[in-house]
Length: 106
Image 1: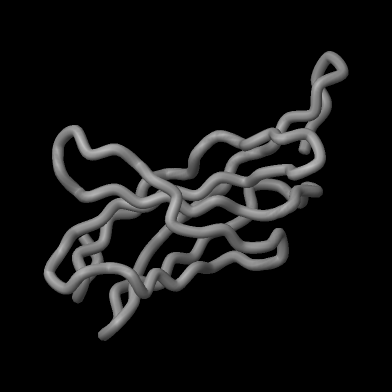
Image 2 (image 1 turned 90 degrees about the vertical axis):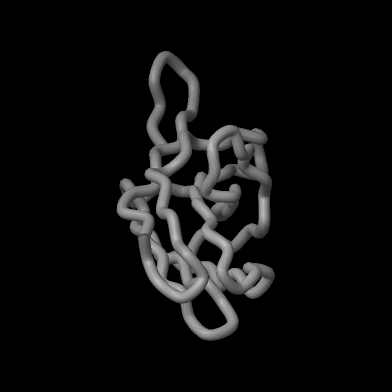
């Protein structure tokens, strides 16, 4: 987190990428800066025009990966990740999007 004019700001997540496995999609990312935050929110949308993101999971601050076992075979999804802080309800900006077709990376 950074402090600017008395406000605490969460920093972004970097280098999100995904790999499809037989039954899951494995997402990995890097923490943009060594900050104090509670964890990460993982969001997913269909890889189609107008599709909206929805939360699919959360992980703790020390975890830099997520396994999505709810992905359907042959379906293409885009993911993004955001850091969050429970104490003040803040959520950082979203990471880059990583799109994965169940079976290969796009």
